[in-house]
Length: 171
Image (cartoon, rainbow, N blue to C red; front, side, top):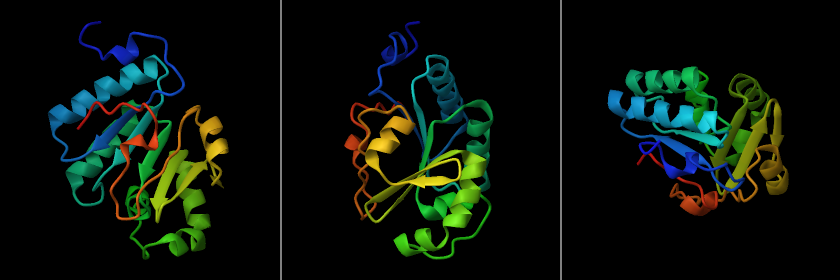
């Protein structure tokens, strides 16, 4: 098991997670993500997906489809525009007001993707099925990520410490 990251060699602890970030996807990177994701699923390590620029190219969207075909994600992390792209819809604007005005749309999307984090304006929403959850403690309990704080900066720069001790194997 030497070619598999150490996180998979031990019993999973509740404060560990694997984050797959979809940046500049290549066939090799996709294959690596699928391999890591399968190991995370096998050892029940929480698996998070951050689909970046998924609506900008057919290749990115195809990579997303392949990932969700082979892997079971605990959470998908995305901004509102990306969530709309994942659902095949065009953006209707941006900002927190758009999210609140479109809770029904988000509920429909959540029914498809089950677990989604929508990041906008330093506020994080996690959907569990059709219900939006805003309470950090409920989020952590609901997704078995005990140390999840999920804080993001408004300017789009993400804090890696959003999920304490989370591991990102794909850069």
